[in-house]
Length: 146
Length: 146
DNA sequence: CAAATATAATTGATATATCAATTATATAAA
DNA sequence: TTTATATAATTGATATATCAATTATATTTG
Image 1 (cartoon, each protein chain N blue to C red):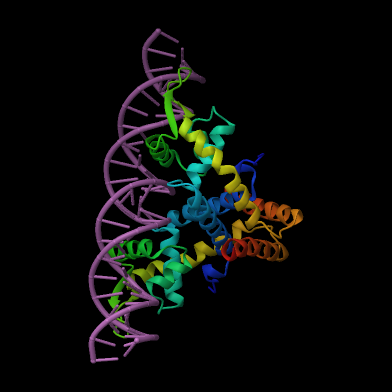
Image 2: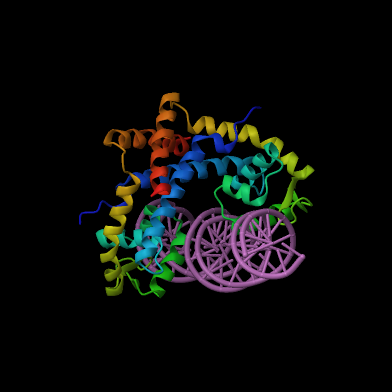
């Protein structure tokens, strides 16, 4: 069987792209905010917009599993960016709240992220973005529906 | 600043696609081979095609850093899929060789991987793949050259 | 209602990711 | 040739990824 090497496939290109973006974005965040990962930043952004998300829902939004999310939330609580409190309506799930310190950090994030997205998408047309989304969507569907 | 949520961006789509593909591919591998990760499989494929790769070069091909690669090679050595030996021409780098056991596993990999790629790219035209590659390439370049 | 099932979160074990520091060897420059 | 610099790999520390098992609480069903 003449199997192309992994490095010759589209998956390699996809992986390489998202990894470079993450490196790039992380570097720009680290230059302005100490001890903040991209994913922790994303969690703050999601919580800010949707304060009633529980851990499971946040996990899904940032592509983590529940176990990873538990530990990630732990470190964010340690850093006092968020706090956990029991949700009396359903004692299985926590209520996650952004602290004042978390809110301060949150203030500084949007311009950095905006800048990251802008630079990394420079020169790419709306139409190309649409194409990208459609094609990737097909691949994703193939993987989940098969 | 009205920043779109991360889940509304193209990066979310890219990340989601590659993660679903990895899940899908890992599931199909695990069904046939015990205790084998995608990345370990990729390392075997690369080594098979290019036997003179050192750890640093392999790392680059599978998007790991050197530290991760050291540990990954450790576990692959433990599992007796590969072995390390000193390279007399340059005693800083190891010679990595696939063992007979590694070769046996390697035999079973290509059909599985072929199947994974085929299914996940089903219904996607050559032209779409080209588009995908070009657009992602632009993003990647923006991230590395900025 | 009581038993069975489902859900959210945690924990343990092991692997991998990441950064900084270190070791050993090779190569370049004074 | 000695010194300085560069390279390949390792190690330590901490965070995250993943799977399986467990706990606590809710919900469904008989």
